Amino acid sequence: MALSLRPPPPIRTDHSNAFAHNTMSVRIPAILQETLDLNPDYPTSIKDRLGRLRDQIAAGAAIPLLEAEGASDYQQWRRALLQQQDLIGAPVTWHNAEWFFAETYAYRCLVEATRYFESRRDPFAPQKKSELASEALWSLIEGALASDAAAEQQVAQAVVLDLWANRIDLSYAASLERGAAFAPEDLLVDDSDSLMNYLGRSATASDQIRGESSVYIVADNAGSELAMDLILADRLLHHVTDRVVLCLKAHPTFVSDATPEDVWIMLAEMKRRGGAGAQLAERLTANWKNGCLLFLPHQFWNSSTLLRDMPSALYDRVNAARLVIIKGDANYRRAVGDCLWPVDSPFHDVMSYLDAPVLCLRTLKSDPIVGLPSAAVAADLDRSDPTWRVNGKRGLIQFKPQSSNSQ
Image 1 (cartoon, rainbow, N blue to C red):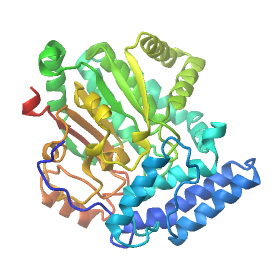
Image 2: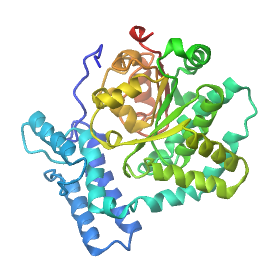
Image 3: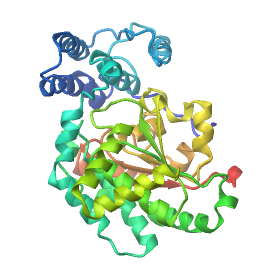
């Protein structure tokens, strides 16, 4: 898992990064309040726990251990908190920790406060149900399935749609309000040609190019983005590969991140509504039954661990893939180390810890970015749109071929 470049230090939640600090002091407390507002039938004990967590995060209080020592991920989170103490050399608070740890841990605390593992009640279900009922979602699905283009073009179209559906993020209104419509200049990096060239070659020589033919999709949001993930999976199964593995969150997090339950809810709603969406759902269900479509929920995707440090068993599976598709902003942060690289740092060097070919599809909702053509591109954007890194307008299609030592 060696890196060819030395990463900068991770972003912190203190005032050294305004967006990270705002996330912990304002955005997450607001999400906790919204969870309270949208679940008015929670018992008083859960409401009290959510209220305390909201107030503690907003105030920058000390970060506590999880309460449930018997939880399967308790020791993992305990080690992560102790590592923060070693790194910081002071009491770890919500406003001085590494951002990726603090944010992922806040959602784990929310899940504990709502007693999700006892009830299996998704605290974000009201928001997810609202999007599932929206006409914008079903218009997007209908348009995506209407293509009669050639096979290669259908895959390329599905990739583009899957990128811009990442704007539909229920945890971030600034991006959500933009919707999936885009202008060509919104795409800052477009490695689509390299990707399609690779897929064309690997379709006829997959055994020689990669040890395994599976394509892994590391999912991000439920709703619109998940629908586009499923359409991309269908296109890949039809034109490119004999197996797609959808990596999902093991429990609700980041408001709209997809779990296996969200996939089944989406497929059921597609079938209920009929038409091309129902046919898609039937194909995907059949592929799931015969093992061509797999769902891989894993606590790693909910954790604060960076991609380069993933557990060895998971790393071995992912690293042997024919292609790894990493979706969305938080997964991008996990992939590049959640730090501020020079913006023109080569994407393939930053991702060198994976031998597998990697495709990142991400709309920008945080500061980390690599692989821009030059620092001048970022400087121009800083002048014309000072919030370009975080406002969800721009997108990236970044592709790294397999490493030379894996060919």
